[in-house]
Image (cartoon, rainbow, N blue to C red; front, side, top):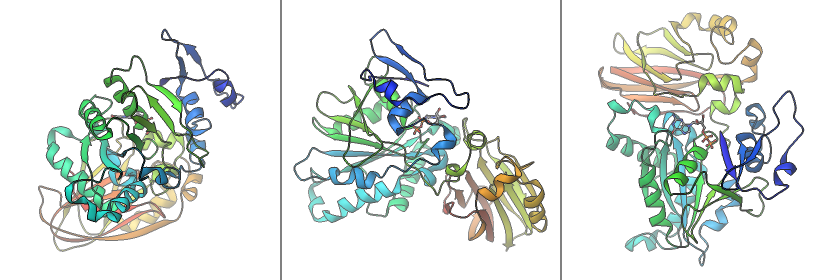
Length: 411
Ligand code: GDP
């Protein structure tokens, strides 16, 4: 990805490290508009303070938005603040920036008495922005349902006190919803507001900000300038020219979510797990004593059923192989096939590195085979849609510390 950034002379050189391990040196070129065009790696140097090498990225410190930006959100005399809470449609619960959302909810709660006539002027407002909508099987979904579903999942992540000024379903890749989002952001920011875009790493924030800038009429790519926030070692970057003369849009460093399995994967493993095209369902009819594996990352055991069989639909990257078999063979699968036929992890040695393999129990009940009753979502990987007429006890196995939630079904 090429991103143009207005770098003061010397900044680019300053940030560069000697090329290591055969990595190409960063390329920079002057564009017709006189801006410097830099590669994503250089952008990362500015943005994350070092090379965005996916393997190294796992080791980068997290950006503490709450500590760094929190105090600036609700200053009594300050300009209006708007937080864009970005969540990836293909991994909503895993990617939703819940700590930041809780901060916004807490600020609203502290002033709940003032809400009678709408949001008090100096309180931070929030918009939920669901990114990569094109990854969902959109023809079979109604936008209204996705909208309501996303709203309720955001409240589940942040607490019911989260008051959203709106929910936007967007695809920066397709240009869906970008214009509406920009109009709404401009309206909420007013003449002098500060807008903060917040999201987990890989949520699609850079792609969206580029799309917003294009939509706002910024010629070429947006101009990124540093906006140092005291106490941070990672940069918050001001995106110029998008909101008008005095309102400001800030891009913040991607949050590291340790509870997303992707945060533990190597770049090669990430390539297999990350969803790039519209998701396609893979459905199994399963009975008690059977298990479904998603690569060597997740296993769902059908432990008890009040009916003969249930339908389990896997929503995950098509590059991750699935395996359905008897639960009694599951131990053998781990010992002999994890890291080999069942990838990721890639390589036997990586299995232990991903952590301890732990079980979480879910009880699901439903009254139809045609529609899914519940989803069981695994942060960073995808989800199982469960369709059943009756009750089921399911055992979900994955690596310790990875978030697994049961939620109302999306599809
Ligand atoms: P950031 O780390 O949040 O800045 O995320 P990026 O903007 O770098 O995007 C992460 C990955 O998601 C990249 O591979 C993008 O190509 C992809 N991506 C971003 N936006 C979209 C989108 O709207 N649709 C799809 N399908 N992929 C997207």
